[in-house]
Length: 502
Image 1 (spheres, rainbow, N blue to C red):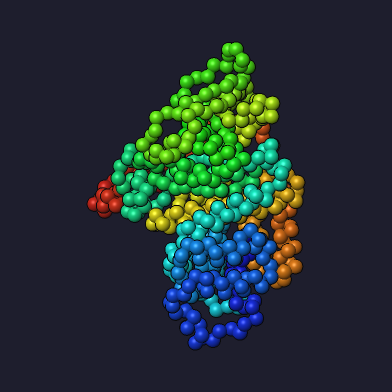
Image 2 (cartoon, rainbow, N blue to C red):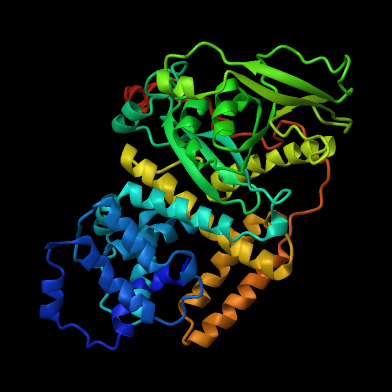
């Protein structure tokens, strides 16, 4: 994707060699006339194709943006914030450590002034309205396309035994406490009303080889059919023939294993805690491998009769016992279940090493929530919250694409490079990329950028373990146990303040 294009999008008219618009023409162009999406995006796209210095344009081509917006069926106004400019400004907002809309508009204002275009308003109202008109489905489709395209271009030695491994995992996100957010994503019932924050459950399917997001599903954090398994079943079509699905013990139930198997995929998961213990003894079984048969349970309420009939009556599995002898680790023994039955082609050591790499999903989620600051969202409405999530996932895929380019040049695996280091490097190079005068200068900067990303390797920390505790003490303030408005009213009536005196 063109990182430079996010900031150079509004300069496209100047680069086309067209005359500067007069004040009267500016007034006409700023009218709120509704135009079809292809016309709105098409002008910007044609200009950007001729625009020099787009080193990452192949990762998110402008034609792809136009098609995604057109397929979503949106209609936009012919103003400064066209769909393409709005999208690039939105992505730059996510990429920047300061996630505020004011900072994003200020960056766009500075760029327009630098290239000699009429400055836009410093008020962020127009941008926020344009961002609200971005179709959510367009952001979702762009995220899926960028993630799957990079996986299709993965080097053969990045794969596991020549096969694509896809990891599924879930997490939780919080958002501002607004009535609309509370209605769509209610807070925990254990917390008093007006004290907690709305919660969202997010389930993501990652590629193990390149680290990109292949698909994601969002839902409430509580309620019927809102758990991780229900959300995963809404997107499990991303598992294709020949894939290997890697997941923790939550996903190792009959239904999800059978659904993956009917698609021609295999699974490697930890044995579900609700199943009976497996005894690795007896005739015909080794001490570390055992053959298993799972019988199909009665049909659950959420499954249709046709889907139930399509699943096999029995599942033939292989159980593997893994003893963890590393000091400091909490888990001492694992029991893995897999549909990879050939113990010669896939050995006990292969399965143990593959499941150990399942922890990469936790690291990918940490990159999203901590490094990209997605753990606390800023949207005031459910629709904007979901767009914000897809925007983070799309930017994450773009950075992963740059990391894959750097890894290919350095002849290493992408997971050997640091996501934090890559993000810091991109943010450091962006000011110079924006002000590069020529295409040759941009290309030179990009070569150095990819080389710098390749140097930020993940530290060699084998079998590292840490206490599950934090050293830094929190501020000496009590928890808010009532709605903030009620607390302010008490203070206005002369109530004593809580906390340590200053």
